[in-house]
Length: 371
Ligand SMILES: Cc1ncc(COP(=O)(O)O)c(C=O)c1O
Image (tube, rainbow, N blue to C red; front, top):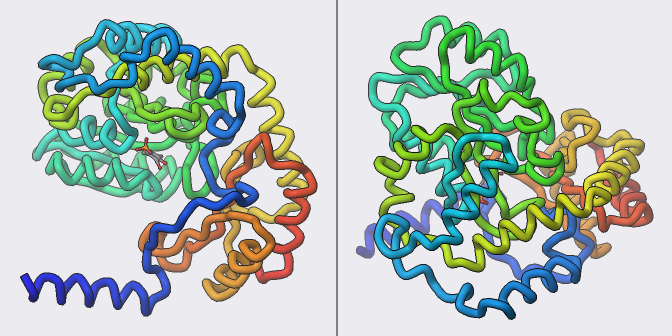
């Protein structure tokens, strides 16, 4: 045991020396340019009141679900919520999970196997990679958003083929060429899986829904812990996909189902965002205001995630420290979360960020050498 702890200590010391040791820090009362609460549902007072009303009517929704969905945890509310989500997204079926991480593990670990191939955009989320590792399928990365490279790989892929992308990328804040990739998937008979963690809510019911390409997509993963202000995730797709996951996806089978308050809050979040169409409009105004400062070269115009790269990690660290001194909370992303050389400051914009706050943020950043 001592040898193991020594090994861990050495790994941690190496990280500390490289300056990228991960640490849990208390969440302070700072100006928020780092959370995924893009539409402010987690921080406004209105939405929690809506949830309190639900709890008041049915306090039992706060208790645990008592078991896996396949044993005692399959409440009527769970089934109704999945039906509700499927109809809103205009797909046949939805299957709920307690997080986007477990939804991606569930999906990628079991839908293909040893003799198949998964083509991953090099920037897809870690949960997708981890799911692919469990599946034992061959994994090939294509250059970010590069449809020519993807097509090259499609031509030489073996077995059943999956393509994994995000519609709005969490690190670069840019969009996938969704239609072009959906067409390529069709041309080569590959199944397209789209992670919409950051697009749901910020762009209505996500970009698959707004582009109306549900019939060209094998599965879409939507998560509720970001713009929707609650917790959980759903895999959207066909009836047969849902039944297959219920039978073969370990994170679904061997885990206690969510409690009813989570289903209630997911339905409430959809209703709230649907009713308050102004939220996404104000968010876009904030993004436009930020973009006018011309700091991000890699993120796209209407993305709530704006990434800024600096000439060195030293400049990045100094900028973050200066921002923290002025009470602004941003998030610096270092390797191994991104490749060495791709370190960046990740700015999340929210509808509650004022123009003055954005001005202050941008004026500090522009004192450092960004590229
Ligand atoms: C693109 C993407 N997919 C999936 C996840 C995981 O979702 P969750 O936080 O609900 O586990 C995240 C969260 O960071 C994400 O950014």
